Amino acid sequence: MIFVTGGAGYIGSHTCVELLNAGHEVTVFDNFCNSQREALARVARITGKSVTVIEGDIRDGVALRDALAQCQPQAVIHFAGLKAVGESVEQPLRYYDNNVHGTLTLLQAMAHAGIKTLVFSSSATVYGDPQYLPLTEDHPLSATNPYGRSKLVIEDMLRDLYRSDPTWRMGILRYFNPVGAHASGLIGEDPQGIPNNLLPFVAQVAVGRRPYLNVWGNDYDTPDGTGVRDYIHVVDLALGHLKALERLQKQPECRAINLGTGVGYSVLDMVQAFEKASGKPVPYQVASRRAGDIASCYADPLLAQALLGWRAERDLAAMCSDAWRWQNGNPKGYASD
Ligand code: NAD
Ligand code: WQD
Image (cartoon, rainbow, N blue to C red):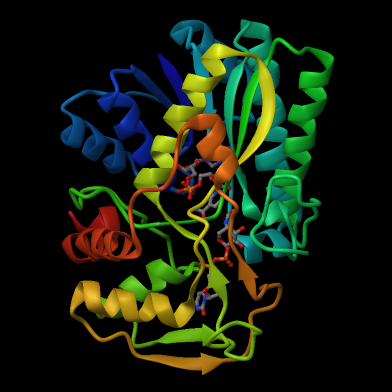
């Protein structure tokens, strides 16, 4: 049994599918602050297997203790968190409370239950403005906003905990830019309000929900002047979690591992690929740079290959066509039903 916090969310729901497909039982613990129950009904539809759902908040230690005592999971995959960078600048205390206090409470409940295997969702944002590319795991860490700092504090908390008790088994996965959707088109990213991230915005332009894309700057030091990122298919990312669990079964450790493809694409590359996948135009206009953005960011994915035997298999065309199948079949996300 794997206990998945935030399992109803974008990456969590895709990971639940792969866990169930691999024969694991799954309990999701989620407060649904940024997700819909329908996502888990779809997970069940895709896999033909059911997910146990506990509605609860990771800041609620009593609820967590009860849930862990009831499930006796072999491991926890911890996705629950808030993730909007701009919002974190406006509401830092909410981010520290939800992400840092929430994770602290989870770790206390796990320690209490004697469950010491954890896979944590970190982010490439912990590398700050890259000093070199591709980013290796030993690149210096820094944060440029409260969201990123919350991930950094959590990473440090995990390392401190491991130092104090090296029987913990902790995988810190640093995701690059997750995109795409399950190939069935039944689950995908369902942002509330105006999407912050590029691909959901592009998809909403292609489906006609928004008139055009703002390209945040075309004067970066990149091949076409627009920002370059390491986009990774969410199903590849999900599979990385299974590999991380397999490794943790073998030995205690606390290690950070990049999950990226190692390839960078620009904003205009993404627009073009999405137009091709969808057969729809994606009109755009160039606007000024978005505060806090960096020019380029992509992973060195070799540690994941060496330690997990994992690498991303799905290419840009698959990322876009899968995202389009989800967007086109569910133009208003899970609310389309
Ligand atoms: P998401 O918002 O879709 O999923 C997060 C889930 O956690 C949601 O279901 C939400 O309801 C739940 N949640 C939030 N706070 C909670 C709380 N206090 N108690 C219980 N449940 C709570 O986000 P996602 O894109 O699936 O991201 C999952 C994790 O990966 C997050 O920790 C995020 O910071 C991290 N991450 C995401 C990205 C990305 O671009 N999507 C990149 C790097 C890292
Ligand atoms: C990608 C590129 C934008 C929207 C963020 C977080 C990071 C991680 C992933 C959680 C950039 C450009 C975007 C738009 C645009 N999340 N863009 N028009 O900024 O790399 O990373 O999400 O951990 O922490 O910071 O992703 O998708 O927002 O932007 O031109 O409407 O697309 O400038 O170059 P980013 P993104």
